Image 1 (tube, rainbow, N blue to C red):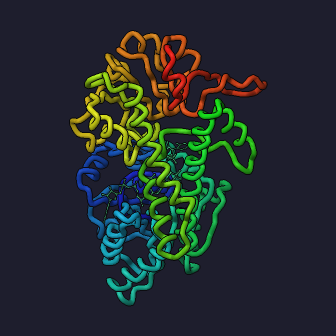
Image 2: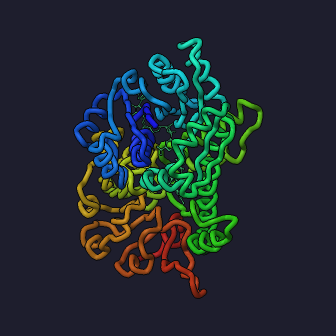
Image 3: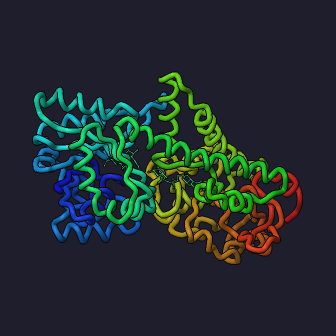
Length: 459
Ligand code: NAD
Ligand code: UDX
């Protein structure tokens, strides 16, 4: 099949490269010239493990091309996928400007029988709206519209795309369903479940899936708070409830509050859809507020730990990306926490292996290594679960830091070891001694984030 991908960002580029890997002939089109120039020169504009290899191979085999001319990219396509951004508006609703603009642009070169497929995350009803937009631009043209939401996770995008839990297709006519079935035939043949439904259901599935996963994260974060109060260990609790196959262990890792380009935006949009249609999504509304509170509470925790006597304290922030294995920092906890620390007079030294968001500007002092960032620090705050932070040399850290406090928002460090090196190690939702039952995987013990007794006692 000949496929055009409009938007060569995290989703468009991954989808385009993976469609080429499945044997299709793909053109990725983006209005961002610098992005296309980089891709043509063999440079990836994003960091995504495994993607560069596929892009290089498929470009060489002429299965994957890049361009900035939508007309040229779409002219021969059997299917045109829209993977442009759908950002939040101030009221939480999503902004469909990019989708509608792209729809108008593809309408002109679209040939008869082509299927326009929405891969971006869009509110229910958007596929129908897209049909109207294209029909207005190209009255009389026979075409189909489909919805094919994407469930890939950044940092694992290629694997998620090529081994999906399911492929969801919303098609309101048999031709659209047939074309999508053909495009995904190699994955369906390998056993990937395909759910073929109408466009409204497909659009709704995407939001409900992300809201549900975000609720799992929000839930375990509150359980972590409770564990801290009762002297429990959230990691043991997550393990224990996760072994129930009806619940599952995935998305039960406590952290500094979820971020990224999807969970925050999609939960806000889901809540807004509920309000607009008179079916309020109370759980999601609460989740959104609690998630922001959590990020703010961590900033307050850092300031409490430092105390008011210390002037211009040096805080080392390890991890700015919203999660590991991506260079994406959109709505990451760091973007909420760091400005509050700076506002309170802290000098913030930061390190991240891949993310260096421009939005933090010159307010932060960036370092090439975590040790350089931690040198002279009063406190180290770990926000992203990069493996290299898990493997920090605590002896070296102790030698370099001025203070002895580590706030470990991803529970990466071994409690026992950190305390042995003289650290006050504040982890999330862990205060209890390690469980003694055989098979329990947790090894950690020590203080907990927000532990007032521990805060008052000497190290
Ligand atoms: P992104 O910002 O990384 O990429 C979007 C790209 O679209 C940009 O490069 C932009 O220049 C381009 N673009 C905008 N208008 C265009 C036009 N008219 N013609 C050509 N190119 C145009 O966004 P993303 O993270 O890839 O997300 C895209 C969509 O996919 C969003 O709706 C998002 O919610 C959804 N989604 C994202 C993820 C994810 O993990 N990032 C996962 C699933 C779904
Ligand atoms: C998410 C969805 O998982 C994916 O299906 C969808 O296509 C896009 O949105 P992504 O944003 O890439 O993917 O990351 P994800 O792994 O879901 O993590 C989202 C946020 O939740 C991150 O900030 C992450 O750190 C946090 N999280 C996730 C936790 O705090 N604990 C967990 O157990 C899981």
